[in-house]
Amino acid sequence: MKKLLAIFAIAAIVVACNNESATSAEDAQKVADSLRTDSLNKAAEAAAKAAADTMKAATDSLKATVDSLKK
Image 1 (cartoon, rainbow, N blue to C red):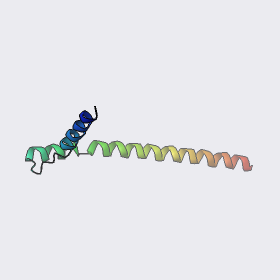
Image 2: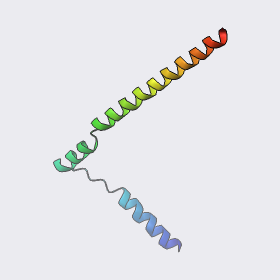
Image 3: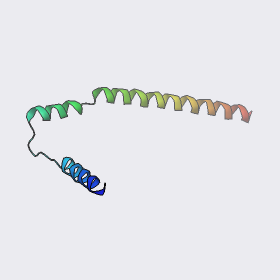
Image 4: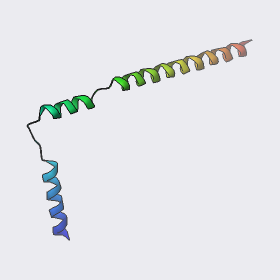
């Protein structure tokens, strides 16, 4: 059983270390396409704006509460 596990471990190392230094233009284009984040940037900006609006509303509400307690 130990021999079998050792063989699997060596096979896993060989597979994991299979680095190809040559990349084709098609592979480079696939990587570039996968890294495009235009839609992610728009979603992040919308989420940040919504969070800022929520925090501003909470701050305004808290200020109003404090002002009402002072009276």
